[in-house]
Structure formats: structure tokens, C-alpha cells
Amino acid sequence: MSQPVSLPDAMAERPQLFVGGRWQDSRGGEVADVRNPATGARVGSAALASADDVDAAVAAARTSFDSGIWSRATPEERAEVMHKAADYLEKRAPELAVSITSELGCPLWFSEMAHVPNPIRHTRYYADMAREFAYDERRTDGTNTSLVTQEPVGVVGAITPWNGPLSTPSLKITPALAAGCSVVLKPPPETPLTVQAFADAFLEAGLPEGVLSILPGDREAGAHLVAHPEVDKVAFTGSSAAGKAIMASAAQRIARVTLELGGKSAAIMLEDADVETVIPALLPMAMMVNGQACIAQTRILVPRHRESEFVEALAAALAAQKVGDPMLPDTRIGPMVSRRQRDRVAGYITLGREEGAKVVTGGETLPLPSELEAGWFVPPTLLAGVDNRMRVAQEEIFGPVVVVIPYDDVEDAVRIANDSVYGLSGSVWGTDVDHAVAVARRIRTGMVSINGRPQAYGSPFGGYKQSGIGREMGPEGFKAFLETKSIAIPS
Image (tube, rainbow, N blue to C red):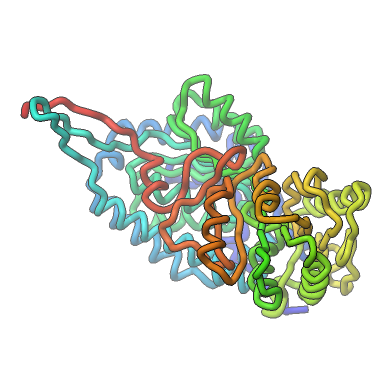
């Protein structure tokens, strides 16, 4: 067991809410303890927002937006503030990584490699985009001329989940602020600590008062924010079920929405896929954030005549993944974020057995050292003998559980991959890259990787079907916070 890592009190104890650029006591909300998922020990505490807090934050956002103090600031002024905020986050990167692992439970090396650097990169990327974007375009038909201009959409209500405590909020806060919007962010009660670094960063960077609020809260606070008549745009990441409710609520006033929802991504192993090369590259894509990622590759589609080969290799690789203290550098899999999430994942493994699948490795429980017995762990689990109609093949488990599904030919593989209400991510594996790309083009999903290659930075992130509406990241993520206006002008 590693030595206990303590956070500075300023990061661990957040008794106030950041409302319109000021730290304030909650107007009736609770203060919730935050627990370390690996040990159950108390990490810190955070104030949770009430409906009155949401109202105050939206009012501050509305006032600041309408005043033009930020919405009509020059792109250069917005970029300067955002780069200063990125500088602040960069200085605190080691503390932020420890904070994320303490409240989420993902391995510290992953926090250091992705969860902290990515938000800093997003902040700088959108700062530069604010400065370089072409907001105005003249169009003429030979007789008449229009000035087509892009303006900030207005007050943004952003709601984020617990599996990306800093990175997911950054995909909403940074493009929205770069575009000139005012933002009210509602992160979840499970991971309410690290995200407050954005409040510290933008306060130090000189963001005008009223432009940003950060209100950790429960579903009721989120629903109140979504339904608020002064919120012009809702940006949400979470479950498809919650996305449907948000879409219905926003429809009452035709509020704009960006929804990044669930996934059940298929990894297609083509006939020429080399199992020894594939497995080490596939596992990080299936097990990231301890399997708690919407883009996780959790349906492994294999040629039927090679099923036993892939099952044997996957089982050995999963069994070799070290499960334990996420602060240790050799830990590959940490705990689930909460007891409820652990029980949910374990319930799906039991369901898989009941549906006729075979648990090849892993299962519902895991022997643990005494210091981790109170943690919320699930071992990496492989289910074989799975039919795509089973619930474990159709529903998002959100844990370290993968299923192997055999197929007869490429047509069958494409059919199975597309036989899902989701369409967020996926991958195709094989030595003939042209053939793999041809198969990838047929997958109804927003993102596909060939042989585990990462997407280029600046590529759009989002999905088809019930995996969401709209795109984040890249220029698409910036344009999502702009409205288009056409002004007829003299030629």
C-alpha cells in the first residue's frame, strides 16, 4: 500500500460555491463528504447547490452576458484570460492529478497522463481559436450582399459526469468562454473537488464577475438548471436516459443542446488480425478509467473459427492486469467510483451468467488486502459465449467488463456492430489497413480507430443514434456555442 496522500485543505475542503465569480455559502444546499473509492476514507467535502443557488448563478450569468463585459470583449482579451487560467492549472498539475485519483479512483498515472494535461491543452486550444476564428463572412449573389456573422449563443448550462472530473468540464467551459458565453457548470456530487480548480484559475486570470459559476449538485439541481428559462444552451455529458429527459425539457423553449451520451462500442477483429499485437493495444481502450468510459471498447467481435484463440488471449491479459491501490505506479485497474457503481457492475456480471454467458475470468468479487477491503473494486471480467441480443451486449455496463461475440463473415460483423442503440465509438483491427478502413466506413458510429490509433487532436468527438447530438472538441466544439446571424448590407 502506498503512503496516504493528503490534498491541501484549499483543494480538499470546499464549503462554499463559486457563484458568478464569488465564493458564497450555499442557499440551503448540503455539504457532502467525498470518499476515496479505493479505501472508503474521507478525502474532503464540498458544498452542493440548491435550486436557489442555481437561480442566483443563472441570474449572474444573464446579467454578465447582457452587459457585454465578456460577450463583447475582443477575442484577444478572451484569449489572454484563458491562457492565464491555463498557466494556473499547469502550475498545480501534480496536485490536480492526486485530487482526481483521490475522488475518482482511476490510476494516478492516468490522471497525470490524460486527466490533467488534456484540460490544460483544451483551454489553450480554444483560447487560440477565439483569437483566430473568422467570425464574419461576406456573401453576395451578384446583386445583394449579406454579412454572415457568428455570435455567442448566450447563457450556457453545462452538466458533467463523474468519470472526467476536470477533462469533461473543460470541453464545455473552455469553448463556451472562448466564444463569449457565460457559463453555469453543474458537476456531480461524486467528484466535486478537482473541478473547482477552474474557479480558482479563472478567478486569478481576471475573468469578469458573473461569467462563470461552478455548482456541484444532484440531479434535482441539474434538472432545475436545464429547465431555467434564462439558459440559452444546455451542454450535457451523461447517460442516454438523462439525455432524453434533458432534450424534452429543453424542447419546451427550443433551447439549444449538445448531448454526449452513452456507448457500447464494438471492436471488430478482422480475419487477418494478429492476436499478439491486438490484445496489448486493445486493453487500454477497454479498461480506461477502470472501464468507466463511454468510448470503452466493450464488445469484442471475433471470427467464429478464431473465437477460442481470442478468448484465451483476452482472458490471460485481463487476469494479468494488476488491480489495487490507484496511487501505485504499477496498478492498472482501480476501484469503481462508488459503492452503487460497484454493485451495478457486479449485477451485470450476474445477469450475464443468467443470460447464458460464461465468466472466463474475473467475476463479482475480488480478494483484497485489508487496507483496500472497504474499496469499491470489480476485477477485470471477460464474458464469452455472448449473443448480441443479451443485455450485457446491448446495455452500457460502465465497468471493467468486456464481452466476446463471434461473427461469421464481414457482413455479419458489420451487422452486429451496428445492432445497437448506441453509436459513439468503435475500432477495426487487421493488417490490411485499406480493408479495415473500408469496414470502418460502414460502422454507424461517430469515431472509429484503426488498430487502436488515437484520433488526431482537434478531431470532433460525438456519436450517432442514442449516443448524442452535436460534437465536442475541434472547431465543431467551438461552433456549438455560436449562433449565426445574417445582416443585409449595401453591396
